[in-house]
Image 1 (tube, rainbow, N blue to C red):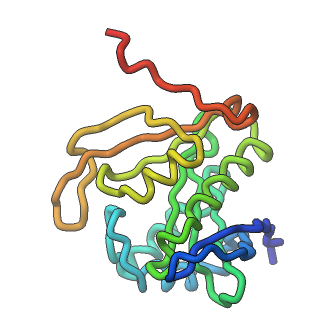
Image 2: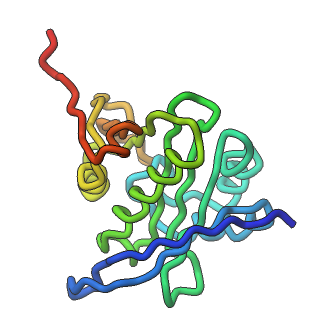
Image 3: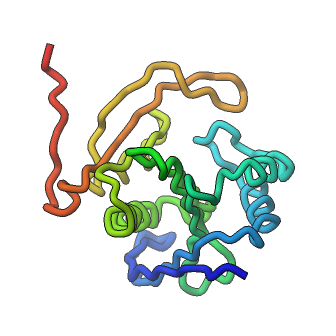
Length: 200
């Protein structure tokens, strides 16, 4: 059985009343033996800002069979929160064999808007820049996913692109897509290098 690598984050999150609480997040690397668990976990939740908002277990199983969550190109981690026996989130790195990896973050509905996303994205940058030779990471989101866009800005990621009407949802409606990125040198120095949008 493959070893599941674990990473621990001491985190501050908000409860339902808005009070800040200190908790511990554990990120546990996905293993092939988790396939059925993963199919059920994703299919039981609503994902309003993903292309498939409520994928059937069979669809997720196809993603798994296609290698979308493991292998040389991908690395996936379950997110566990203190006092929760089941995962509250999932973060998957993709395109690790390319120069610029991208990622997908999913949090269960009851765990959204508690600043968990900010903690995970900060950890993700640290993980990539200390465990690989990558010099940048990208993240893509829909233009109307305002909480995720706020997370990117809070974590020092910079908006690099705006693609019009290129993100279809499960009904066929099309939305603009936004790309954010962080550079290793900015992450190391605690700086944010803006894009020059006025070069024409």
